[in-house]
Length: 64
Image (cartoon, rainbow, N blue to C red):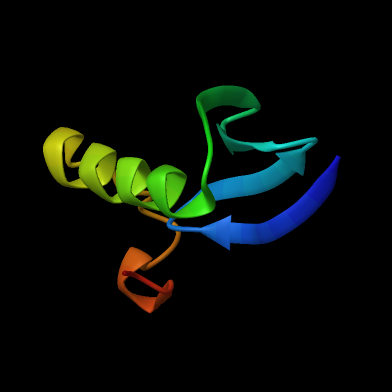
């Protein structure tokens, strides 16, 4: 498994064979391919749930 992003909006993104895993709080939240779908899903998840990590400013992370 190869790490693609160490911290994308609070998620760690790994590539495993032909799928991408988005991990948050040590749980796989999304498993999709291609990478753009995983990033879009994370963005949508953040927007809908309004989750934020009070110890970090999520606005500093790259966004699509």
